[in-house]
Length: 206
Picture 1 (spheres, helix red, strand yellow):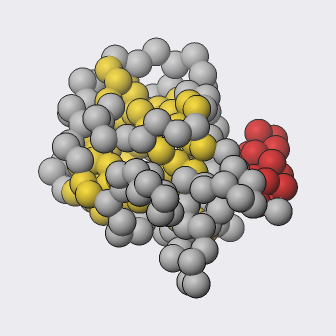
Picture 2: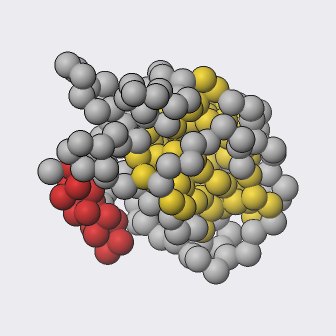
């Protein structure tokens, strides 16, 4: 059943109909926008494969984000924790009522959280909370993320609490984050251990 829902969500995401909130602006992405630097962290897990690189429209930078999170499951369910990251991109006028949203591959479980916005500036670095391999236990991989804004603020994601925070990524060269690529493990079937989002890369533009 999980495999069926994962396939359906992947299909809907490709044709652009998956929407976490009814108040969202248009989802736009450009695969050709040049970027100045790539941000990575060292504690991401390696299950799954890298999805497509999703870049914001030219002249726009990420100033907010939301997460797709599966809440804790009771009675020994297979938790997946963090399933997706969506970036909300604005131009340098910082009008948050006029934005584009971008995302890379997304897991098939959970719900989207509310958007968190930088009070000033754009997203410029990130830190990932990851659970190490659990052996015969339930693996969840990435659980949460937090971002630094170029204006100095830190935004905490509404993810789950398993795992430890790794080191911060480098800080953007350029104006701010303008693209994202996620590593997602697809459904492992009824007998497998699902982890969904394992790792993420961010891209920065002038």
